Length: 234
Image (cartoon, rainbow, N blue to C red):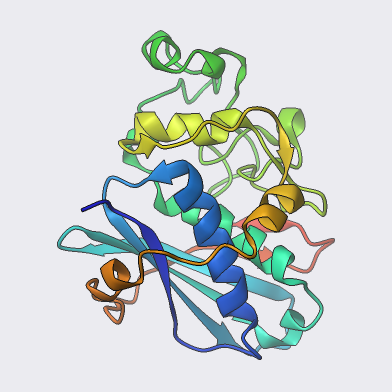
């Protein structure tokens, strides 16, 4: 039985998180079969501060990995489904391993350049750099901001995000199976538009997972309303 990425809606506003979660999960399920199934738990909070969303450190039970993302109701109405789905897709990337143990073995933490061993497996990594600035949470956990700017897995959220093929292909080095290679740099809006109407075909398999399992963990990233820039914490 194949592993998959699915979601649990703990709380929502007018179905917006459910729609965004479906799009983000469809995106990753199209390209990657995770080493273990992943459940993303989505909820809400209300704050009059500048925090748009916050994500928590992943946790696990048996062979399932869990991630938690909460969105501030103050801002949700301002954002489209694709805006919210972009944040969810980014955090699924972290749950897949960006910024965690296997990822940290792939590159030199001083230069941000990938090792010859990693490049031998995924040659495109020779042209990639890991972020080495901006402090805890951003540094060493994302692609380099200056060079790759609006890419999905940089540490700062942008309005016109895109995905590089390497963002998919590096999943192989994180223990996952790449199901489909992205042919070229593609806007996130284009990819999400292709996937918005796709119906989830693994409903019975998803129901077999413990979707309700929940553990409180520390905050991993927060997204603030400072020009819609993501200021991650770790």
